[in-house]
Image (tube, rainbow, N blue to C red):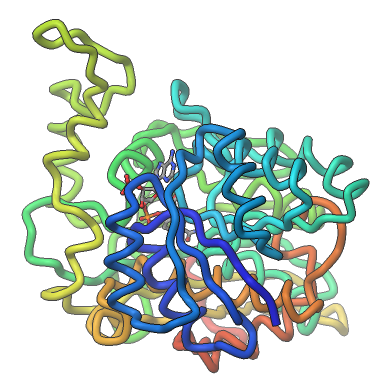
Length: 398
Ligand code: NDP
């Protein structure tokens, strides 16, 4: 069907590349390009298919991206590098007439602040160029928005509350490690919490609001209110929602390490001078922490991510709905060599790319995933390793 270019060769890109390679009728050619070519080569060799080639690019550099795109002429770029590169890659897409998909919204390097405004500002340009940009197509953001769109389409006349609940009940056996890029992860978790209620945003101190929530097949886990990027687009696209929140589980050991890291200044993004060299503490920390790509082998347990929604059903009667996926770290590792956090992000990225290439999610402009038809995507989740389950009129606990 078409050629895709994957940018990045980390945990998420590894899963997406494995999954794309399983569907040669859809992804006829796959190019993997990243900053370190040896990582792309190792990934291509691990997959071992003749339709995969590799290249090198600094995705912060638009002219380099333009040369890369012109060299390979892909139909779609799947951006699985870091959020800092979103805008340069979108600029190059516009210059070369290439469609775009990512899993995390833009964040400036020097400010731990992520919001969609920067990428939404490209809407007219993508529309005029006849190009599609699909934003936030991982699990959360990604499947969380698609679950919400599915609930709105099939069950609710009006959604009133939305709680996205993200539990990692896995154990990797390390004292402290993050499940995806440590710098991005720690920047996200140490931000102030934020939720939507009655038409406005409310802020909380970082991780100060928490309660136990019960996750299927796992049991109760302490869950912490955080700000998460999909809340911004979901309250805009579903204005009936009166309250929207995001919860994530953390173990006590993780939180203790995080507090120490912050207290000693290692989570700082401000450059400091060390022996005549400028270093950014959080980037140095990333260099000494376990590589999330290498956690998979001994990872036990599973993740459980879903949406808990209340409102009125199609007849106007009160209803609650919980839709979720559980994903085993070990099963993800056996299939792709990566743990479930990378797996639950890389699989939806592949499915979003498939939706675009099949013409199902092809619409010039810049879109969040919930703006497309959720049904074909939901069907593919069941086929590609992320089956989902529904609970009607249960206790949402929230
Ligand atoms: P990793 O750190 O494992 O991988 C990032 C990759 O991007 C590396 O291969 C890195 O290269 C490459 N890269 C970084 N900077 C550049 C650059 N300037 N030019 C070219 N390549 C570059 O991250 P993950 O795989 O864990 O995460 C990838 C993305 O997925 C992130 O944006 C993350 O926020 C997002 N994510 C989304 C989730 C969701 O559910 N929506 C959940 C988890 C992650 P090198 O190895 O040389 O540094």
